[in-house]
Image (tube, rainbow, N blue to C red):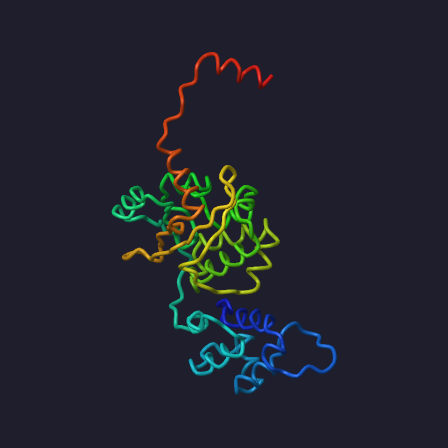
Amino acid sequence: MTDEPNLLGEYLRARRELVTPEQAGVPVAGRRRVPGLRREEVAMLAGISAEYYLRLEQGRDRNPSAQVLRAIARVLRLDDEDYLLGLVADRPRRARRRPRKETVPPSTARLVATLALPAFVEGRYLDVLAANPLATALSPRLAPGANRLRDLFLDPGERAFFPDWERATEGLVASFRRSVGTDTDDPRFIELVGELSLASPRFRRLWARHDVATRPSAPMAFDHPQLGRIRLDREKLLINGTDGIMLVIYHPEPGSDSADKLALLASDLLTPAPARTPAAEALERRAER
């Protein structure tokens, strides 16, 4: 038997456990010892044999037809059947690779710097590759060298920045899994998932669900430490000529309270800090004693 990871089986098992009998229209009689659907129930609803479905989960059959996978996707209520189909695509076996350096195209970097909205560039592994000053003013974690996943799960300041932190973590993990796809032998992926799995019980639980989603556009709410609640729309735009690098832009509804707050944040960036006089410095030193 091959020693390749059983990505298809792991995904099917995780998603099967999240679908209730009521959602699938399966009558419930007595106590059930397993969460979600039983294997034989998935097989019945998908129109395949229970033995064949078992072989899929155990990794003994890794080449099911697209028709079978689409039937299973329907039963498991999957929003993104393309991800499921991608798990069985023929992929050449590769030796362990060196980390790939993600590079922002110079024209994109210039665009980000000139935008009058919070904007940053996000890599496949949710690393911040470039950001403009307004994005960093919105959140200091939106700065080159930061990682969106690591900060959201491990940085208390970033957790406080999101009023609905649990929902934000669900969406980010699901989009991260979609971004990586089956490219799980990349050292950057292994390092990041290993670190977060050890440090964050919340990340471990979400990663085990195998949620997959793309959220290019979405309304967002943030709790800024000085300006309070800000509501912005987020756009994610794929940068042509790159391997999954995204341009992320936040923009407010025109005329809204959040638009006024964002304008205030931008004006603070343009206002030079007042000169500190010797008397002011002396007062500060006295206050620190």
